[in-house]
Image (tube, rainbow, N blue to C red):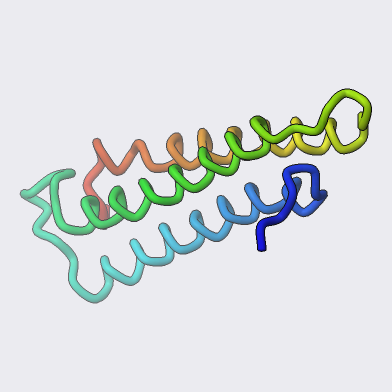
Length: 114
């Protein structure tokens, strides 16, 4: 069953997904650094950063898909409340996808376990 684009639940799903991803990303980084730290000579290109980046891509894709879904299936102007929720949800999904990318960018440049 698919949630309609105008359902108010969409207003919190994007930021909740981002918060969960953020917790898993940095929690996983901390555990990986404690259990099996990479060689510092490898720099930013190591197994931890590769796994973190590959885990980020599906999250960004899902958030972008949800934003497109809410924007594409916006109700007609005769239903202003539903239209507002759908458009606002699309914006919040895009904001969450952008925040996910911004938080993941240091994975490209910084070595983990500093």
